[in-house]
Image (tube, rainbow, N blue to C red; front, side, top):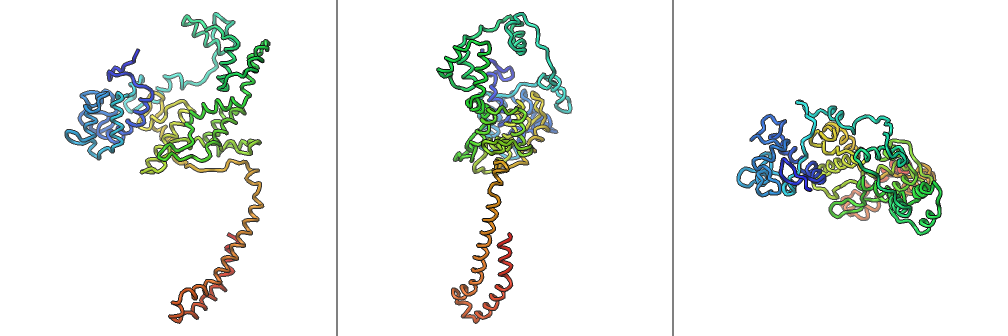
Length: 448
């Protein structure tokens, strides 16, 4: 069965297509069309509103899957009359974005179920209407018919819904199938022959629990599930732009994640380290002698950065928006980035909320910082200070020697002084320079 959008008469858009609209197309409308064609404009010219889907899809303004016949595309290309917008033509990339959007069926999110106030979006009403924003409360597991099936309180919630629908749980997998499934799930690898044999011999009531504990304690557990986390934060070892140069030392973040999963770092601690690892007390790893809290900050760098952007400011805005998107989807499960151009009526995020978060990230910058613990950083400090003092002294001696020889070298290499009878005057000036400045030069070289 294919879902069809009633408004456009085409197949319902995918999540990726809707994200393309929100991140690529709607910002073009907001920046170049809303001033004349939106519900906020003083006068909506030609009755066309680019913040109203019903307005955009009528009178041939946008014809899904037919860019060449869509009046919008013809207008921005300047075909058949006046080019739009009148304040300045769109560039080739923006026009190509609009063409791509129309050809993919012009995806546009459905209208929200909650009505907005006349003054704007009612954020509090939306929060009250959706379960995701309700306070967490203790829940009593429901009563079920097949109480013997439930091994954990959570099982009763699942079983109650199955029984409500007239369904029964699938039969339990046999021991070999269960062992293969749980091993793949926790480590990403099949069970070894000796593990299969050991589990077959263990007929104790806790045999399954012992297998799970062994897998959770294995190094492969962290490797398996750190990769899942890396997908969330869009882990990358290169810029992703032209030339695709490497991002230095990203492997240290990868190894930090593996260690964190294998060390059972609490989730709330993992979040603190990612969001504010430089502002919280250090979490020192005694084996690697690193401050793990600082390593978590590296995820901020895992966003698209232009290697040689034509417009550095535009690139800065782009990767800051990407940071907001990664942060909100990873830690909140919300598409906060959609509120860049409008109040997000589905996730109850206002545009004000978005720019509050944007402002925090925009006040940071990429940098490389040492993550070694204090003991490692201080280990050779005294020896380095001694060497630095010796280097300064040697450098000062070289400067003084070169200054003393400067006068004679200039006179011998430049006959202009002799020709103009200035040799004696220059020697006098040079002697004064040496007497007044040698001590000062030595002092500065040794103390600064």
